[in-house]
Image (cartoon, rainbow, N blue to C red; front, side, top):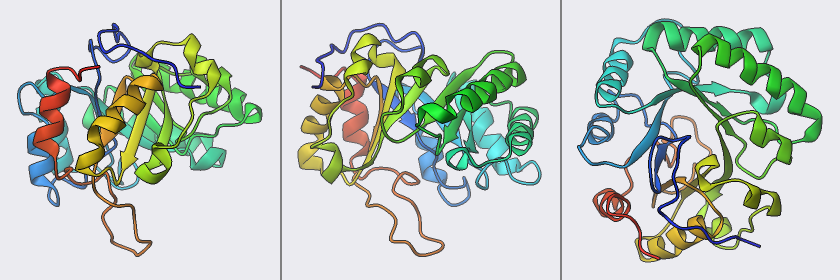
Length: 253
């Protein structure tokens, strides 16, 4: 059953004191200039922002992404590089190479390991990966992008776990894994798309009940499956100003 948390819990892993945003990764700054500019608005409750140049760091430094990342870091916002683990099938050396490029080219503060495995059998390999990335960063922030609740041992392999990523139709009926009650909300992240404006308060309640300290809610719909389509998390939510205001002042119980 979900466990109730309060919004004033100290969130040391995220560097914030209440519920805040983890941005999964906007589209390229040339495609989404407004989105990137909004992230530097003073008072926006950001825990971190993911930089995904081209399904990773790309083949060479991108000056537009470097500029966008620099503005965020100058504003005190943590920038994470996007690394695709391909559910455990990604070649270890390729993953480490991409991580090093993110650090060398964009001075990232950590990584989101997207499509991270969830099973116990894969835990040792994931631990090897996160230990190596920690050395590449010389410290830094690591987020495992499972998208669902993994085997409990993963909680000790990184700073945060994405334990939900999906549509509102599933989120509103979702259940939290009982083992998460042993950890504070700073350790868990929820990404939810297709959340109607009229259900924002309900979505906030679910996040609190399930013990998530970092969230990203949007009213944008999921991918339609066609090439070139923008994903639901690559643009601003239609209610961006409203959700920034609500989280910025602390969502009431």
